[in-house]
Amino acid sequence: MKRIKNRKAGNTIKKREKRKPGLLREILNEFLDSIVISLLIRIVLWIPRVIFSFFKNLF
Figure 1 (cartoon, rainbow, N blue to C red):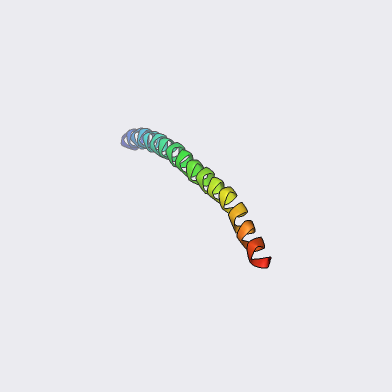
Figure 2 (cartoon, rainbow, N blue to C red):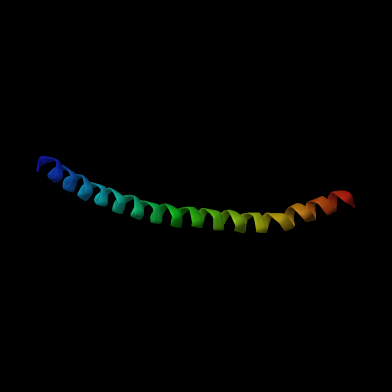
């Protein structure tokens, strides 16, 4: 009987632990997505400058 009770308690704790990382993962994913998008925008904005300066140096 004691073992069964411990198992039930363990399962409830596991479920609670699973819920928290899910929320944290969602927040982290949104945060990482925003970082990736901002980096992509920066790269896209920087490419023309790099190409332009490269051609300026050639000519």
